[in-house]
Amino acid sequence: MANEEVNTGRRRFLTATTAVVGAIGVAGAAIPFVRSWLPSVEALLAGGPADVDISKLASEPGMFMRVMWRGKPVFVFKRTPDQLALLPTLDAMLVDPKSDEASQTPAFAKNESRSIKPELGVLIGICTHLGCIPIQKPEVQPQPFDPNWKGGFFCPCHGSRYDLAGRVFQNVPAPRNLEVPPYHFVDDNHLVVGVAPAGAA
Image (cartoon, rainbow, N blue to C red; front, side):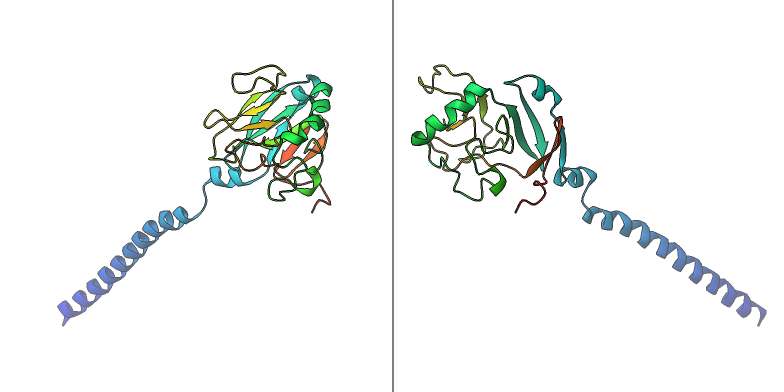
């Protein structure tokens, strides 16, 4: 009789201990599994707005910088008055000079320079042909790919060309202008890529 009581107590103890250890094991296995469903810190940052210090651009015309937003290169650059003056003269050579393709140009950038401030350009640096990254060629001088080059962006993969507003030239593989991302200026030295100006559609 005493042995049966001891065995029953031992059984209960072993059953309870096994249940507790099993529960801890299941929880230990489940936590990493559930965490794997959550986006990484890098992914969260990549999807958020990008704060850009443009103080160097503000002081030096012709400067260029590349930042990342959502895993895409974004070109931020300052155009000179001479470069801006050339933009209207190129319309007849462009596929979409007035930026009518709504998916590439938000309403706040539907103007000659495709930007909020004419001198400061902000473009997603991905060729609209097959996704290569164009090279900035701002100089107004003959180039191997165009003897009458007026400055802009050249895609080294298949020869697509864009002006300094990111508008695509005719007779190249790329079908559309470079995309203008949503962005706004915080002040003269900072902009945020990923958030459109207040009141923009």
